[in-house]
Length: 189
Image (cartoon, rainbow, N blue to C red; front, side, top):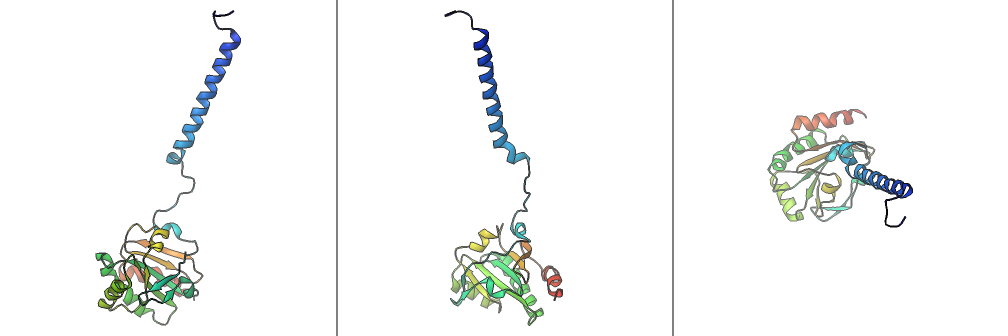
């Protein structure tokens, strides 16, 4: 039957092909839109998403040019504060960090200020102008900010004695908030 009406066999083949195309399009649609509707691994945004994980470490230099690393502080509770001199909340928070360092002096608590993206001279002068005596590290490549997914500055991570991120905060903290965050870790010894 040339040029005539389609045969039963050719129309069944045609329908089969159409269904395969529809199913393939549906599968592609599900794969494309599925992440918007299903939360496979709900992860907290910002640095709090790293709580319970080993604290990432990078080899940096301090404001005097000496090599530093978080590894050196294993066995101590560490308050790592990411900051910059252009950040008003950072400026307001720094004296409270120094006050916390003084409160826990000699008690296995380390406060580290990690300057994000500025020169050692600028970071050192800023810290000196505020009377800061805790270590100032220079993270010119902003590795910590990216790794800890800092949503802004200041950002603070509290690392326990085993090197695990115990708490993490975006935004400035008051002295009372800082003390409340570290006191349970300091009491564990």
